[in-house]
Length: 398
Ligand SMILES: C[S@@+](CC[C@H](N)C(=O)[O-])C[C@H]1O[C@@H](n2cnc3c(N)ncnc32)[C@H](O)[C@@H]1O
Image (cartoon, rainbow, N blue to C red; front, side, top):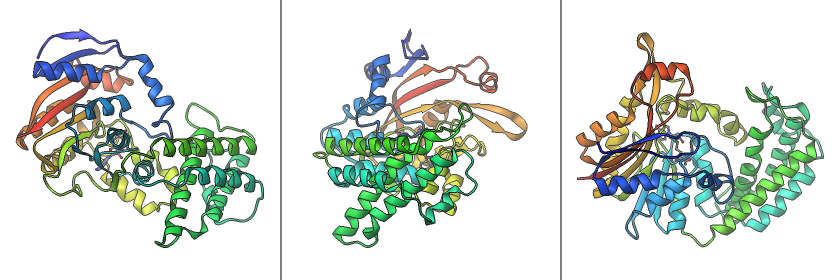
């Protein structure tokens, strides 16, 4: 371990610890460092098209990608909404992603594969908004079943919009060019509607929004415009891939990646699949698929305390996917698991990953760790004197 220094991170003011190669750990420290204004990246620009929990900071992805040699092939086994994939497109690198959350994969795909025509998206979104005032019986009325988190007229408008989207993209079944164009358009429209589900629903800290149907439609059209602008901004960059699958069983051939840049789930912090269950329903995903995905989700807050066991398997898969000499950059935080008799147990992510990495031929070359605050008493109690940290780790495949 080397010297510690205070890093003025927004919100956290975390103490920083560096490990390993002094030059590389200095570089990692520079990459990990964020100033207040860096958060603007999350508010506008290419990463502000759609929300997703626990996203990697785009600047971390961008700066890590800049460390790779020209023409490198990069993968992200926990790609979420596709931050690394999108940044890899901009950097001109070949990128492949994977995630167990079907909502994440559809969102990531929309951001990295050939998109709908932006002008048509804008026009059809306006048509859908105009058409949504005509109320009629629709198969999407079923979306209202058991739904208590929306004001009734807001829910009715969202359902009418969903129905309009389906009507506007009727030719979407099949594989011909027109069907594919309709599928892309539908995906663009659905993901323009999807952020409204968060915006207008009740949450533990907020009542359901009672905005007018016109306001709901205005937000829908704004979202479609935002997507269209994104598609235009990304038009000249190469496409990427996003697969639906379990990181403990990666779909890629062994030794096919020069680099992995990823941020796995932190232990016990989020329930990614459950948090997107409503959205999945509106996207037309089946309850069976959502339930099956949830069971495979690593480290979920409400799940069994198996993060370390599952990550051991995922590390093995990552090692297998890398070429010899390939690099693995990983951003991960410590967390807490609720372990039956033992109560809350602190999980130190770096201990687990460094040990398993070594066993799998992944040598830790450098790491920076910054302390993070505890948001809950049970977490502070579980950690005791050792700080909770977030780590940026670099491994080299030997
Ligand atoms: C920290 S987030 C990654 C966010 C992503 N870097 C981004 O910027 O959107 C962790 C991701 O791991 C995914 N995940 C959890 N268990 C998984 C598993 N067994 N296989 C693949 N992905 C999994 C979650 O669905 C979530 O999207």
